[in-house]
Length: 472
Image 1: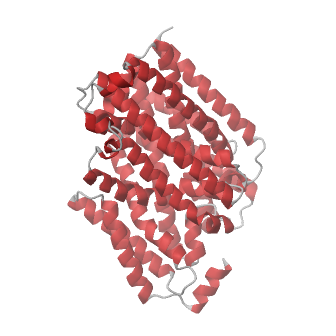
Image 2: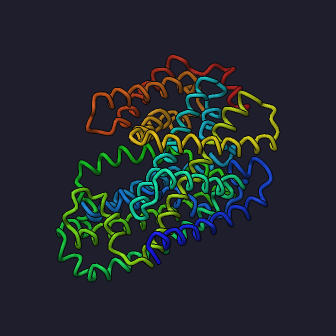
C-alpha cells in the first residue's frame, strides 16, 4: 500500500468515528441550550477531554516539538504556564456557572449592564480569537498533509473544512465536546505509542542523551533551557490569552456544576503538561538523530519522513484528530457569538429556539466558507490573525477580572469598561507598531488597567445603572 493511500484511509477512519459520534449525540440534542453550552450537563471526563483536545491543537505537533528540539524540556514549561492559566480561570467557576452564561460577552452584560457599544466591541474581541484559530488550523492541516501526501493544498483545505461541519452541525457544543473527548483519549494513547516508538528509534534514552547538549535534557535545568527572558515573555503572552479565551469559558458553562468544571479543568491541566512532556521528548529525540535542522519547527516533518508506512498512517490519524478538535470548537464558538450576542440581542430579540438553531447551522456553513477563502487566498495574513489573540487579551482581561472583583461596588460602570477595552486595544496597537521586544499584549493590558481605573473614577455607576445590572 502506498503511503498516501494509507494516510487517507487512516484519516478517513478517524474522521468517520468522530462524525458517527457527532451524529449520534446530535440526535439527542433538541434546543439552543444544547447547541450553545452542551445542555449544561457535561460530565467531568467530557469537560476534561474537550478542554484538553481544544487547547492542544496543531501547535503542539509542530511548534512545541520545535521547542523541544531547540530547548529540551522547555516545552513542558510552556504547557505548564498554560495549564496554570486555565486553573486560575476555574477559580471563578462557581460565579460563572451560577449565572448560566453562554458566551464571554454575557459576563460584561452581567457586570456592567446593557450597553450596545460595549457589547459590540466585546463580542468582536471574543470572535476574533476562535476565528483566527480556525484559519491557522486549516492552513496547518493543508501544509502538513500536502507534504506527506502530495495532494493539492486547496483540495485538502476544502475537504477538511467540509468534514468539520459534520462535527458541528448535529449538536453544536454537545457534539463537539463528545467528539473532543474521544479524540482527546486517542491523542493521549498515540502520544504514548509514538513516544515508545521514538525511544526505540533513537536507541534508548542513553543514546538520546549522549547526542544532545546536556543542558537541555538535565532536570530541572532543562525546563529553563529556553532562557529566562523567553520564559518571562511566555508568562506575559500565555496568561492573558488563557484567561480570555471564550472556548475555555464555554467548557465551564457546559459542565453540570462548578465542581465538575473544576475537576475537569484540573484533569485537562495535567493532560496539558503531559502533552508538553511528549513534545519535549519527541523534539529531543529528533535532535539526537538529526541535529542539523536550521528551523526547529521542521522537526515534526522530518520525523514523518523516517517512519514506516503503517506507523505514518496511524500518526496521521493522530494529526487529524488533534487539528479537527480545535477546528470544530472554533467554528461553534464563533457561531454562538453571532447568534446569541448579535442576532438574538439586537436583531431579533423574540426569536424562538428552533429558528435560532437553524440560524446557527446556516451560520456555521457561512463561517467555514469565509475561513476557507482566507486560508486559500490570504495565507500570508494568518500571522496577523494570530495577533488578534493579543488584542483580545489586551481588551478583555482587565474589564473581566477586575470587573468580577469589584462587581458589588459602584466603581464598575459600562463607560469604565469601555475605557479599559479601548485603552487596551490602543496600547497593544502602539506597541506592535513600535516593535517592542515584550509581547505587545502586555502593554495593552497595562494601558487597559489605567484606562479602566481612570474612566471608572470619572464615570461611576449611577443608582439606576446598579439596579439594571442587579436585575440582569
